[in-house]
Image (spheres, rainbow, N blue to C red):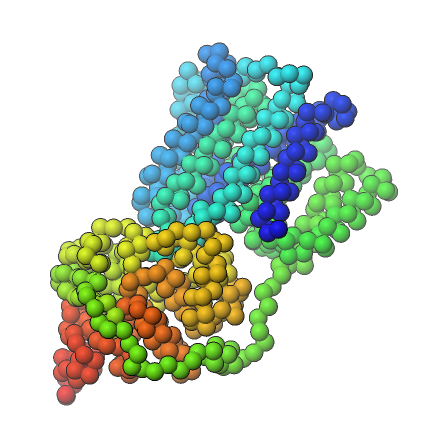
Length: 634
Protein backbone atom coordinates (compact mmCIF):
# COMPACT_ATOMS: atom_id res chain seq x y z
CA UNK A 1 0.00 0.00 0.00
CA UNK A 2 1.47 3.34 -1.06
CA UNK A 3 1.71 6.35 1.24
CA UNK A 4 -1.03 8.09 -0.74
CA UNK A 5 -3.45 5.18 -0.37
CA UNK A 6 -2.66 4.88 3.33
CA UNK A 7 -3.41 8.58 3.74
CA UNK A 8 -6.76 8.19 1.98
CA UNK A 9 -7.71 5.22 4.16
CA UNK A 10 -6.80 7.07 7.35
CA UNK A 11 -8.77 10.11 6.15
CA UNK A 12 -11.88 8.00 5.51
CA UNK A 13 -11.60 6.23 8.86
CA UNK A 14 -11.28 9.52 10.74
CA UNK A 15 -14.21 10.96 8.80
CA UNK A 16 -16.40 7.95 9.62
CA UNK A 17 -15.50 8.27 13.30
CA UNK A 18 -16.28 11.99 13.41
CA UNK A 19 -19.58 11.47 11.58
CA UNK A 20 -20.58 8.77 14.07
CA UNK A 21 -19.61 11.08 16.93
CA UNK A 22 -21.90 13.81 15.60
CA UNK A 23 -24.85 11.50 15.02
CA UNK A 24 -24.63 9.63 18.33
CA UNK A 25 -23.38 12.48 20.54
CA UNK A 26 -26.45 12.47 22.86
CA UNK A 27 -26.26 8.69 23.31
CA UNK A 28 -22.57 9.01 24.19
CA UNK A 29 -23.20 11.93 26.56
CA UNK A 30 -20.75 13.91 24.48
CA UNK A 31 -20.85 17.55 25.69
CA UNK A 32 -22.30 20.11 23.27
CA UNK A 33 -19.36 22.38 24.07
CA UNK A 34 -17.02 19.93 22.35
CA UNK A 35 -19.27 19.82 19.28
CA UNK A 36 -19.14 23.61 19.06
CA UNK A 37 -15.35 23.60 19.48
CA UNK A 38 -14.92 20.93 16.81
CA UNK A 39 -17.28 22.83 14.51
CA UNK A 40 -15.05 25.88 14.87
CA UNK A 41 -12.00 23.76 14.12
CA UNK A 42 -13.73 22.35 11.02
CA UNK A 43 -14.42 25.87 9.74
CA UNK A 44 -10.76 26.80 9.99
CA UNK A 45 -9.65 23.49 8.50
CA UNK A 46 -11.90 24.18 5.49
CA UNK A 47 -10.52 27.70 5.12
CA UNK A 48 -6.84 26.76 5.46
CA UNK A 49 -7.19 23.77 3.14
CA UNK A 50 -8.94 25.84 0.46
CA UNK A 51 -6.40 28.69 0.83
CA UNK A 52 -3.55 26.22 0.54
CA UNK A 53 -4.59 25.03 -2.93
CA UNK A 54 -3.18 28.19 -4.50
CA UNK A 55 -1.10 29.84 -1.79
CA UNK A 56 0.54 26.67 -0.51
CA UNK A 57 0.89 24.36 -3.48
CA UNK A 58 1.49 27.07 -6.12
CA UNK A 59 3.13 29.67 -3.87
CA UNK A 60 0.77 32.56 -4.75
CA UNK A 61 0.41 34.09 -1.28
CA UNK A 62 -3.10 35.45 -0.83
CA UNK A 63 -4.57 37.82 1.77
CA UNK A 64 -8.02 37.61 0.20
CA UNK A 65 -9.57 34.59 1.92
CA UNK A 66 -11.99 36.88 3.76
CA UNK A 67 -13.54 37.83 0.41
CA UNK A 68 -14.83 34.29 -0.10
CA UNK A 69 -15.91 33.92 3.53
CA UNK A 70 -17.74 37.25 3.39
CA UNK A 71 -19.51 36.61 0.10
CA UNK A 72 -20.56 33.14 1.25
CA UNK A 73 -21.73 34.36 4.66
CA UNK A 74 -23.69 37.34 3.30
CA UNK A 75 -25.24 35.22 0.56
CA UNK A 76 -26.73 32.97 3.23
CA UNK A 77 -27.55 35.75 5.69
CA UNK A 78 -29.27 38.06 3.20
CA UNK A 79 -31.23 35.37 1.40
CA UNK A 80 -32.40 33.51 4.51
CA UNK A 81 -32.85 36.48 6.83
CA UNK A 82 -34.32 39.04 4.43
CA UNK A 83 -35.88 37.05 1.60
CA UNK A 84 -36.94 33.79 3.24
CA UNK A 85 -34.89 31.59 0.91
CA UNK A 86 -34.08 28.11 2.20
CA UNK A 87 -30.60 27.75 3.64
CA UNK A 88 -30.00 24.72 1.43
CA UNK A 89 -30.37 26.87 -1.71
CA UNK A 90 -27.98 29.54 -0.45
CA UNK A 91 -25.02 27.16 -0.12
CA UNK A 92 -24.70 26.27 -3.83
CA UNK A 93 -25.40 29.89 -4.74
CA UNK A 94 -22.55 30.98 -2.43
CA UNK A 95 -20.31 28.44 -4.18
CA UNK A 96 -21.19 29.87 -7.61
CA UNK A 97 -20.69 33.50 -6.54
CA UNK A 98 -17.36 32.80 -4.89
CA UNK A 99 -16.23 30.71 -7.84
CA UNK A 100 -17.01 33.61 -10.19
CA UNK A 101 -15.23 36.03 -7.87
CA UNK A 102 -12.14 33.81 -7.79
CA UNK A 103 -12.29 33.40 -11.56
CA UNK A 104 -12.35 37.17 -11.99
CA UNK A 105 -9.38 37.69 -9.66
CA UNK A 106 -7.43 34.94 -11.40
CA UNK A 107 -8.27 36.15 -14.89
CA UNK A 108 -6.89 39.60 -14.03
CA UNK A 109 -3.90 38.55 -11.94
CA UNK A 110 -2.67 35.54 -13.91
CA UNK A 111 -2.94 37.16 -17.32
CA UNK A 112 -0.56 39.86 -16.13
CA UNK A 113 2.75 38.11 -15.55
CA UNK A 114 3.99 40.92 -13.30
CA UNK A 115 1.31 40.23 -10.67
CA UNK A 116 3.30 37.77 -8.62
CA UNK A 117 4.72 37.68 -5.12
CA UNK A 118 3.94 40.71 -3.00
CA UNK A 119 2.04 42.38 -5.87
CA UNK A 120 -0.42 39.49 -6.02
CA UNK A 121 -0.72 39.55 -2.21
CA UNK A 122 -1.60 43.26 -2.26
CA UNK A 123 -4.16 42.70 -5.01
CA UNK A 124 -5.93 40.00 -2.99
CA UNK A 125 -5.76 42.17 0.14
CA UNK A 126 -7.67 44.92 -1.67
CA UNK A 127 -10.59 42.67 -2.66
CA UNK A 128 -12.14 42.12 0.81
CA UNK A 129 -11.67 45.83 1.58
CA UNK A 130 -13.69 46.73 -1.51
CA UNK A 131 -16.39 44.15 -0.78
CA UNK A 132 -16.68 45.20 2.87
CA UNK A 133 -17.18 48.84 1.82
CA UNK A 134 -19.89 47.79 -0.64
CA UNK A 135 -21.67 45.74 2.03
CA UNK A 136 -21.46 48.55 4.59
CA UNK A 137 -22.95 51.23 2.33
CA UNK A 138 -25.58 49.01 0.72
CA UNK A 139 -28.67 48.72 2.90
CA UNK A 140 -29.93 45.70 0.98
CA UNK A 141 -26.85 43.74 2.06
CA UNK A 142 -25.86 45.15 5.45
CA UNK A 143 -26.01 48.93 5.65
CA UNK A 144 -23.81 48.89 8.73
CA UNK A 145 -26.43 47.15 10.87
CA UNK A 146 -25.52 43.51 10.42
CA UNK A 147 -27.74 40.74 9.09
CA UNK A 148 -29.51 37.98 11.01
CA UNK A 149 -29.36 34.43 9.68
CA UNK A 150 -32.58 32.44 9.76
CA UNK A 151 -31.60 28.87 10.69
CA UNK A 152 -33.25 25.89 9.01
CA UNK A 153 -34.92 23.04 10.83
CA UNK A 154 -32.48 20.31 11.77
CA UNK A 155 -33.29 17.09 9.91
CA UNK A 156 -34.49 13.96 11.70
CA UNK A 157 -33.70 13.56 15.38
CA UNK A 158 -30.64 15.80 15.26
CA UNK A 159 -30.55 18.87 17.48
CA UNK A 160 -29.22 22.13 16.09
CA UNK A 161 -25.71 21.72 17.55
CA UNK A 162 -25.38 18.31 15.96
CA UNK A 163 -26.65 19.70 12.65
CA UNK A 164 -24.11 22.55 12.68
CA UNK A 165 -21.34 20.15 13.62
CA UNK A 166 -22.16 17.76 10.79
CA UNK A 167 -22.43 20.55 8.21
CA UNK A 168 -19.05 21.97 9.23
CA UNK A 169 -17.54 18.48 9.22
CA UNK A 170 -18.81 17.68 5.73
CA UNK A 171 -17.46 20.97 4.31
CA UNK A 172 -14.10 20.46 6.03
CA UNK A 173 -13.93 16.85 4.80
CA UNK A 174 -14.64 17.96 1.22
CA UNK A 175 -11.97 20.68 1.46
CA UNK A 176 -9.37 18.29 2.84
CA UNK A 177 -10.39 15.65 0.30
CA UNK A 178 -9.98 18.09 -2.58
CA UNK A 179 -6.59 19.15 -1.20
CA UNK A 180 -5.56 15.50 -0.96
CA UNK A 181 -6.74 14.65 -4.48
CA UNK A 182 -5.03 17.70 -5.98
CA UNK A 183 -1.72 16.86 -4.31
CA UNK A 184 -1.83 13.28 -5.62
CA UNK A 185 -2.83 14.22 -9.17
CA UNK A 186 -1.23 15.86 -12.19
CA UNK A 187 -2.56 19.16 -10.86
CA UNK A 188 -0.46 18.75 -7.72
CA UNK A 189 2.70 18.21 -9.74
CA UNK A 190 1.86 21.21 -11.91
CA UNK A 191 1.24 23.48 -8.92
CA UNK A 192 4.44 22.31 -7.25
CA UNK A 193 6.40 23.11 -10.41
CA UNK A 194 4.74 26.54 -10.50
CA UNK A 195 5.71 27.06 -6.88
CA UNK A 196 9.36 26.20 -7.54
CA UNK A 197 9.78 28.08 -10.84
CA UNK A 198 6.74 29.08 -12.86
CA UNK A 199 8.63 30.20 -15.96
CA UNK A 200 10.54 26.92 -16.17
CA UNK A 201 7.32 24.95 -15.64
CA UNK A 202 5.64 26.80 -18.53
CA UNK A 203 8.56 26.20 -20.90
CA UNK A 204 8.57 22.56 -19.86
CA UNK A 205 4.99 22.09 -21.06
CA UNK A 206 2.90 22.86 -17.97
CA UNK A 207 -0.12 25.05 -18.83
CA UNK A 208 0.43 27.24 -15.79
CA UNK A 209 -2.49 29.61 -16.34
CA UNK A 210 -4.96 26.71 -16.48
CA UNK A 211 -3.76 25.13 -13.25
CA UNK A 212 -3.60 28.43 -11.38
CA UNK A 213 -7.16 29.19 -12.41
CA UNK A 214 -8.19 25.70 -11.30
CA UNK A 215 -6.56 26.22 -7.90
CA UNK A 216 -7.95 29.68 -7.23
CA UNK A 217 -11.49 28.76 -8.33
CA UNK A 218 -11.51 25.55 -6.25
CA UNK A 219 -10.21 27.52 -3.27
CA UNK A 220 -12.84 30.21 -3.77
CA UNK A 221 -15.72 27.74 -4.04
CA UNK A 222 -14.66 25.84 -0.92
CA UNK A 223 -14.02 29.06 1.01
CA UNK A 224 -17.44 30.39 0.04
CA UNK A 225 -19.28 27.22 1.05
CA UNK A 226 -17.46 27.21 4.39
CA UNK A 227 -18.41 30.88 4.79
CA UNK A 228 -22.04 30.02 4.15
CA UNK A 229 -21.99 27.39 6.89
CA UNK A 230 -20.05 29.79 9.13
CA UNK A 231 -22.93 32.28 8.87
CA UNK A 232 -25.19 29.61 10.34
CA UNK A 233 -22.71 29.05 13.16
CA UNK A 234 -22.45 32.70 14.22
CA UNK A 235 -26.12 33.54 13.56
CA UNK A 236 -25.51 37.25 13.00
CA UNK A 237 -23.24 38.42 10.18
CA UNK A 238 -21.41 41.75 10.32
CA UNK A 239 -18.82 43.26 8.02
CA UNK A 240 -16.15 43.05 10.70
CA UNK A 241 -16.83 39.39 11.47
CA UNK A 242 -16.37 38.12 7.91
CA UNK A 243 -14.45 40.73 5.90
CA UNK A 244 -11.92 41.74 8.55
CA UNK A 245 -8.21 40.92 8.58
CA UNK A 246 -8.69 38.33 11.31
CA UNK A 247 -9.70 35.57 8.89
CA UNK A 248 -6.80 35.86 6.39
CA UNK A 249 -4.25 36.34 9.17
CA UNK A 250 -5.45 33.30 11.10
CA UNK A 251 -5.58 31.22 7.92
CA UNK A 252 -2.02 32.19 7.04
CA UNK A 253 -0.71 31.47 10.55
CA UNK A 254 -2.43 28.08 10.62
CA UNK A 255 -1.20 27.04 7.19
CA UNK A 256 2.36 28.24 7.79
CA UNK A 257 2.39 26.58 11.20
CA UNK A 258 1.27 23.21 9.86
CA UNK A 259 3.16 23.35 6.58
CA UNK A 260 1.98 24.46 3.15
CA UNK A 261 3.52 21.72 1.01
CA UNK A 262 1.26 18.87 2.20
CA UNK A 263 -2.50 18.48 2.50
CA UNK A 264 -2.24 17.54 6.18
CA UNK A 265 -0.23 20.63 7.17
CA UNK A 266 -3.15 23.10 7.30
CA UNK A 267 -5.20 20.57 9.29
CA UNK A 268 -2.48 20.31 11.95
CA UNK A 269 -2.06 24.07 12.11
CA UNK A 270 -5.80 24.70 12.45
CA UNK A 271 -6.21 22.14 15.23
CA UNK A 272 -3.30 23.54 17.21
CA UNK A 273 -4.34 27.20 16.90
CA UNK A 274 -8.03 26.53 17.66
CA UNK A 275 -7.04 24.49 20.71
CA UNK A 276 -4.67 27.20 21.91
CA UNK A 277 -7.30 29.92 21.41
CA UNK A 278 -9.89 27.95 23.36
CA UNK A 279 -7.54 27.33 26.28
CA UNK A 280 -6.51 30.99 26.42
CA UNK A 281 -10.19 31.99 26.47
CA UNK A 282 -10.94 29.52 29.26
CA UNK A 283 -8.30 31.22 31.43
CA UNK A 284 -9.52 34.72 30.58
CA UNK A 285 -6.56 35.50 28.35
CA UNK A 286 -8.43 36.39 25.16
CA UNK A 287 -6.51 39.63 24.86
CA UNK A 288 -3.28 37.62 24.64
CA UNK A 289 -4.38 35.78 21.50
CA UNK A 290 -2.56 38.05 19.08
CA UNK A 291 0.59 38.04 21.21
CA UNK A 292 0.73 34.25 21.37
CA UNK A 293 0.00 33.86 17.67
CA UNK A 294 2.65 36.41 16.76
CA UNK A 295 5.19 34.67 18.98
CA UNK A 296 4.36 31.28 17.45
CA UNK A 297 4.77 32.67 13.94
CA UNK A 298 8.14 34.27 14.79
CA UNK A 299 9.47 31.07 16.35
CA UNK A 300 8.19 28.94 13.51
CA UNK A 301 9.62 31.09 10.73
CA UNK A 302 13.00 31.04 12.47
CA UNK A 303 13.09 27.40 13.60
CA UNK A 304 10.86 25.48 11.17
CA UNK A 305 10.00 27.50 8.05
CA UNK A 306 8.80 24.33 6.31
CA UNK A 307 6.09 23.83 8.95
CA UNK A 308 5.28 21.22 11.56
CA UNK A 309 4.25 18.47 9.16
CA UNK A 310 7.73 18.13 7.67
CA UNK A 311 9.27 17.99 11.15
CA UNK A 312 6.72 15.50 12.45
CA UNK A 313 7.19 13.32 9.38
CA UNK A 314 10.93 13.27 9.97
CA UNK A 315 10.61 12.41 13.69
CA UNK A 316 7.16 10.76 14.10
CA UNK A 317 8.02 8.41 16.95
CA UNK A 318 9.83 11.02 19.01
CA UNK A 319 6.86 13.38 18.63
CA UNK A 320 4.36 10.63 19.51
CA UNK A 321 6.33 9.64 22.60
CA UNK A 322 6.48 13.29 23.71
CA UNK A 323 2.71 13.63 23.26
CA UNK A 324 1.91 10.42 25.17
CA UNK A 325 4.34 11.15 28.00
CA UNK A 326 3.20 14.73 28.58
CA UNK A 327 -0.51 14.08 28.10
CA UNK A 328 -0.42 10.85 30.12
CA UNK A 329 1.60 12.34 32.95
CA UNK A 330 -0.76 15.29 33.34
CA UNK A 331 -3.77 12.97 33.30
CA UNK A 332 -2.28 10.66 35.93
CA UNK A 333 -1.05 13.40 38.24
CA UNK A 334 -4.24 15.46 37.68
CA UNK A 335 -2.87 18.50 39.48
CA UNK A 336 -3.63 21.03 36.75
CA UNK A 337 -6.24 21.68 34.12
CA UNK A 338 -8.68 19.40 32.38
CA UNK A 339 -8.65 17.04 29.41
CA UNK A 340 -8.30 19.72 26.76
CA UNK A 341 -5.41 21.33 28.65
CA UNK A 342 -3.61 18.00 28.75
CA UNK A 343 -4.17 17.30 25.07
CA UNK A 344 -2.98 20.79 24.08
CA UNK A 345 0.09 20.44 26.29
CA UNK A 346 0.86 17.11 24.63
CA UNK A 347 0.45 18.65 21.16
CA UNK A 348 2.79 21.53 22.02
CA UNK A 349 5.35 19.10 23.45
CA UNK A 350 5.23 16.95 20.31
CA UNK A 351 5.65 20.04 18.13
CA UNK A 352 8.56 21.29 20.22
CA UNK A 353 10.34 17.91 20.07
CA UNK A 354 9.87 17.71 16.30
CA UNK A 355 11.23 21.24 15.82
CA UNK A 356 14.22 20.78 18.14
CA UNK A 357 15.28 17.47 16.60
CA UNK A 358 15.00 18.98 13.14
CA UNK A 359 14.25 17.46 9.79
CA UNK A 360 15.83 14.29 8.55
CA UNK A 361 18.70 15.39 6.38
CA UNK A 362 19.27 13.77 3.04
CA UNK A 363 22.44 11.66 3.19
CA UNK A 364 25.22 13.07 1.03
CA UNK A 365 28.16 10.85 0.12
CA UNK A 366 31.25 11.82 2.08
CA UNK A 367 33.56 12.18 -0.87
CA UNK A 368 35.44 15.14 -2.31
CA UNK A 369 34.18 16.89 -5.40
CA UNK A 370 36.68 15.25 -7.74
CA UNK A 371 35.68 11.77 -6.62
CA UNK A 372 31.99 12.59 -7.04
CA UNK A 373 32.68 13.71 -10.59
CA UNK A 374 34.71 10.60 -11.30
CA UNK A 375 31.85 8.46 -10.03
CA UNK A 376 29.56 10.10 -12.55
CA UNK A 377 32.02 10.06 -15.45
CA UNK A 378 32.99 6.45 -14.96
CA UNK A 379 29.49 5.29 -15.87
CA UNK A 380 29.65 6.86 -19.34
CA UNK A 381 30.93 4.61 -22.07
CA UNK A 382 33.20 6.09 -24.70
CA UNK A 383 31.40 6.22 -28.01
CA UNK A 384 32.73 6.74 -31.53
CA UNK A 385 32.53 10.22 -33.01
CA UNK A 386 31.34 9.23 -36.47
CA UNK A 387 28.00 7.61 -35.59
CA UNK A 388 25.91 10.73 -36.23
CA UNK A 389 22.37 10.86 -37.64
CA UNK A 390 21.93 12.08 -41.24
CA UNK A 391 20.82 15.65 -41.82
CA UNK A 392 17.16 15.79 -42.80
CA UNK A 393 14.46 18.33 -43.56
CA UNK A 394 14.15 21.77 -41.99
CA UNK A 395 12.51 21.57 -38.54
CA UNK A 396 12.97 25.19 -37.39
CA UNK A 397 12.68 28.27 -39.58
CA UNK A 398 13.47 31.79 -38.39
CA UNK A 399 12.61 34.55 -40.84
CA UNK A 400 13.72 38.14 -40.21
CA UNK A 401 13.37 37.71 -36.45
CA UNK A 402 13.92 40.82 -34.33
CA UNK A 403 13.64 41.47 -30.59
CA UNK A 404 13.77 44.97 -29.13
CA UNK A 405 13.84 45.88 -25.45
CA UNK A 406 12.88 49.53 -25.58
CA UNK A 407 15.66 51.17 -27.53
CA UNK A 408 17.96 48.13 -27.28
CA UNK A 409 17.94 45.92 -30.36
CA UNK A 410 18.94 42.54 -28.97
CA UNK A 411 18.24 40.80 -32.31
CA UNK A 412 17.72 42.35 -35.72
CA UNK A 413 16.55 40.52 -38.87
CA UNK A 414 17.99 37.11 -38.01
CA UNK A 415 17.09 34.36 -40.49
CA UNK A 416 18.07 30.79 -39.75
CA UNK A 417 17.14 27.24 -40.75
CA UNK A 418 17.73 24.26 -38.45
CA UNK A 419 17.57 20.82 -40.02
CA UNK A 420 16.78 17.49 -38.40
CA UNK A 421 19.89 15.68 -37.22
CA UNK A 422 22.08 18.78 -36.95
CA UNK A 423 24.16 19.72 -33.92
CA UNK A 424 24.53 23.47 -34.25
CA UNK A 425 26.87 25.60 -32.20
CA UNK A 426 25.51 29.09 -31.55
CA UNK A 427 28.38 31.39 -30.66
CA UNK A 428 29.17 35.08 -30.41
CA UNK A 429 30.61 37.67 -28.06
CA UNK A 430 28.79 38.54 -24.84
CA UNK A 431 25.65 40.50 -25.63
CA UNK A 432 25.44 39.26 -29.19
CA UNK A 433 21.88 37.90 -28.74
CA UNK A 434 22.48 34.16 -28.29
CA UNK A 435 20.33 33.69 -25.19
CA UNK A 436 17.74 36.09 -26.59
CA UNK A 437 17.40 33.82 -29.62
CA UNK A 438 17.04 30.78 -27.35
CA UNK A 439 14.35 32.62 -25.38
CA UNK A 440 12.48 33.39 -28.60
CA UNK A 441 12.68 29.81 -29.82
CA UNK A 442 11.39 28.46 -26.50
CA UNK A 443 8.63 31.06 -26.14
CA UNK A 444 10.03 32.86 -23.10
CA UNK A 445 10.00 36.04 -25.21
CA UNK A 446 7.89 36.92 -28.22
CA UNK A 447 9.66 38.49 -31.20
CA UNK A 448 9.12 42.13 -31.96
CA UNK A 449 9.08 41.25 -35.62
CA UNK A 450 9.52 38.20 -37.80
CA UNK A 451 8.29 34.62 -37.87
CA UNK A 452 9.42 31.37 -36.25
CA UNK A 453 8.17 27.97 -37.41
CA UNK A 454 8.72 24.53 -35.92
CA UNK A 455 7.78 21.59 -38.10
CA UNK A 456 6.00 24.02 -40.41
CA UNK A 457 3.83 25.44 -37.60
CA UNK A 458 4.03 29.12 -36.75
CA UNK A 459 4.94 29.40 -33.04
CA UNK A 460 5.45 33.15 -32.96
CA UNK A 461 2.36 33.81 -30.83
CA UNK A 462 2.05 30.49 -29.04
CA UNK A 463 2.40 30.17 -25.27
CA UNK A 464 5.62 28.51 -24.08
CA UNK A 465 3.85 25.31 -23.01
CA UNK A 466 2.31 25.02 -26.49
CA UNK A 467 5.74 25.47 -28.06
CA UNK A 468 7.04 22.68 -25.83
CA UNK A 469 4.31 20.41 -27.18
CA UNK A 470 5.31 21.28 -30.73
CA UNK A 471 8.74 19.83 -29.96
CA UNK A 472 11.05 22.43 -28.40
CA UNK A 473 12.96 21.97 -25.12
CA UNK A 474 15.71 23.95 -23.44
CA UNK A 475 18.13 24.20 -20.53
CA UNK A 476 19.36 27.34 -18.78
CA UNK A 477 22.68 29.08 -18.23
CA UNK A 478 22.14 28.73 -14.48
CA UNK A 479 20.41 25.39 -13.79
CA UNK A 480 16.83 25.78 -12.56
CA UNK A 481 15.66 22.42 -11.22
CA UNK A 482 12.49 22.18 -9.14
CA UNK A 483 13.98 22.30 -5.68
CA UNK A 484 11.14 20.64 -3.75
CA UNK A 485 11.07 17.59 -6.05
CA UNK A 486 13.43 14.65 -6.17
CA UNK A 487 15.73 14.22 -9.14
CA UNK A 488 13.40 11.51 -10.47
CA UNK A 489 10.28 13.67 -10.15
CA UNK A 490 12.00 16.62 -11.83
CA UNK A 491 12.34 14.49 -14.95
CA UNK A 492 8.96 12.80 -14.48
CA UNK A 493 7.25 16.20 -14.50
CA UNK A 494 8.52 16.83 -18.03
CA UNK A 495 7.12 13.47 -19.12
CA UNK A 496 3.77 14.06 -17.41
CA UNK A 497 3.19 17.31 -19.29
CA UNK A 498 4.74 16.30 -22.58
CA UNK A 499 2.95 15.68 -25.84
CA UNK A 500 1.46 12.46 -24.41
CA UNK A 501 0.20 13.31 -20.89
CA UNK A 502 0.48 10.64 -18.23
CA UNK A 503 0.34 10.18 -14.47
CA UNK A 504 3.27 10.58 -12.10
CA UNK A 505 3.30 6.85 -11.37
CA UNK A 506 3.57 6.00 -15.07
CA UNK A 507 6.17 8.70 -15.68
CA UNK A 508 8.62 7.71 -12.95
CA UNK A 509 10.00 4.53 -14.62
CA UNK A 510 10.51 6.46 -17.86
CA UNK A 511 12.24 9.22 -15.92
CA UNK A 512 14.82 6.74 -14.66
CA UNK A 513 15.64 5.79 -18.24
CA UNK A 514 16.38 9.42 -19.10
CA UNK A 515 18.44 9.78 -15.94
CA UNK A 516 20.46 6.77 -17.04
CA UNK A 517 21.16 8.56 -20.32
CA UNK A 518 22.99 11.28 -18.40
CA UNK A 519 24.31 8.88 -15.71
CA UNK A 520 22.27 10.29 -12.85
CA UNK A 521 20.05 7.29 -12.18
CA UNK A 522 21.98 6.52 -8.98
CA UNK A 523 20.85 9.92 -7.62
CA UNK A 524 17.16 9.53 -8.51
CA UNK A 525 15.97 9.85 -4.89
CA UNK A 526 18.17 12.86 -4.09
CA UNK A 527 17.07 16.48 -4.17
CA UNK A 528 18.75 19.06 -6.42
CA UNK A 529 20.24 20.88 -3.44
CA UNK A 530 22.56 17.92 -2.83
CA UNK A 531 23.92 17.94 -6.43
CA UNK A 532 26.96 19.78 -7.68
CA UNK A 533 26.83 22.17 -10.65
CA UNK A 534 27.65 19.52 -13.24
CA UNK A 535 25.03 17.14 -11.90
CA UNK A 536 22.39 19.88 -11.88
CA UNK A 537 23.23 20.65 -15.52
CA UNK A 538 22.87 16.97 -16.36
CA UNK A 539 19.56 16.91 -14.50
CA UNK A 540 18.29 19.80 -16.59
CA UNK A 541 19.40 18.01 -19.75
CA UNK A 542 17.60 14.82 -18.71
CA UNK A 543 14.49 16.83 -17.90
CA UNK A 544 14.62 18.53 -21.30
CA UNK A 545 14.97 15.34 -23.34
CA UNK A 546 12.25 13.65 -21.27
CA UNK A 547 9.65 15.83 -22.97
CA UNK A 548 10.49 14.13 -26.28
CA UNK A 549 11.62 17.23 -28.18
CA UNK A 550 12.47 17.56 -31.84
CA UNK A 551 14.97 20.30 -31.00
CA UNK A 552 17.00 20.66 -27.80
CA UNK A 553 18.39 24.09 -26.89
CA UNK A 554 21.40 23.88 -24.57
CA UNK A 555 22.20 27.33 -23.17
CA UNK A 556 25.83 27.22 -21.98
CA UNK A 557 25.43 23.71 -20.62
CA UNK A 558 29.23 23.34 -20.45
CA UNK A 559 29.96 26.52 -18.52
CA UNK A 560 31.84 26.31 -15.22
CA UNK A 561 32.94 22.67 -15.59
CA UNK A 562 36.35 21.24 -14.83
CA UNK A 563 38.07 19.10 -17.51
CA UNK A 564 36.67 15.77 -16.26
CA UNK A 565 33.14 17.18 -16.10
CA UNK A 566 33.54 18.80 -19.50
CA UNK A 567 34.53 15.51 -21.15
CA UNK A 568 31.56 13.82 -19.52
CA UNK A 569 29.18 16.55 -20.67
CA UNK A 570 30.45 16.24 -24.24
CA UNK A 571 29.82 12.49 -24.17
CA UNK A 572 26.27 13.11 -22.98
CA UNK A 573 25.63 15.68 -25.72
CA UNK A 574 26.89 13.25 -28.36
CA UNK A 575 24.75 10.47 -26.95
CA UNK A 576 21.62 12.62 -27.09
CA UNK A 577 22.45 13.72 -30.63
CA UNK A 578 22.86 10.11 -31.76
CA UNK A 579 19.39 9.35 -30.40
CA UNK A 580 18.00 11.54 -33.19
CA UNK A 581 17.41 14.82 -31.34
CA UNK A 582 18.49 17.98 -33.12
CA UNK A 583 20.63 20.15 -30.82
CA UNK A 584 21.46 23.84 -30.71
CA UNK A 585 24.17 24.53 -28.15
CA UNK A 586 25.15 28.00 -26.97
CA UNK A 587 28.75 27.93 -25.84
CA UNK A 588 31.97 29.95 -25.58
CA UNK A 589 34.31 26.93 -25.61
CA UNK A 590 35.18 26.98 -29.29
CA UNK A 591 37.51 23.96 -29.00
CA UNK A 592 34.61 21.83 -27.82
CA UNK A 593 32.23 23.11 -30.49
CA UNK A 594 34.77 22.29 -33.19
CA UNK A 595 34.75 18.68 -31.97
CA UNK A 596 31.03 18.09 -31.63
CA UNK A 597 29.14 20.46 -33.95
CA UNK A 598 28.11 19.80 -37.51
CA UNK A 599 27.56 23.51 -38.09
CA UNK A 600 28.36 26.84 -36.44
CA UNK A 601 26.19 29.97 -36.40
CA UNK A 602 27.78 33.23 -35.23
CA UNK A 603 25.84 36.21 -33.87
CA UNK A 604 27.33 39.64 -33.35
CA UNK A 605 25.46 42.68 -32.06
CA UNK A 606 22.11 41.03 -32.70
CA UNK A 607 22.74 40.02 -36.31
CA UNK A 608 23.90 36.81 -37.96
CA UNK A 609 27.57 37.18 -38.81
CA UNK A 610 28.43 33.72 -40.16
CA UNK A 611 26.85 30.32 -40.74
CA UNK A 612 28.52 27.16 -41.95
CA UNK A 613 30.91 24.27 -41.38
CA UNK A 614 32.90 24.73 -38.11
CA UNK A 615 36.41 25.07 -39.54
CA UNK A 616 35.29 27.45 -42.24
CA UNK A 617 33.42 29.66 -39.79
CA UNK A 618 36.26 29.68 -37.25
CA UNK A 619 38.71 30.90 -39.88
CA UNK A 620 36.41 33.66 -41.10
CA UNK A 621 38.19 37.03 -40.55
CA UNK A 622 34.93 38.71 -39.49
CA UNK A 623 34.38 36.05 -36.81
CA UNK A 624 37.92 36.44 -35.53
CA UNK A 625 37.52 40.20 -35.35
CA UNK A 626 34.20 39.83 -33.49
CA UNK A 627 35.92 37.77 -30.81
CA UNK A 628 39.33 39.46 -30.67
CA UNK A 629 38.55 43.03 -31.64
CA UNK A 630 38.47 45.13 -34.77
CA UNK A 631 42.25 45.61 -34.82
CA UNK A 632 43.07 41.91 -34.83
CA UNK A 633 45.30 40.60 -37.62
CA UNK A 634 43.94 37.55 -39.39
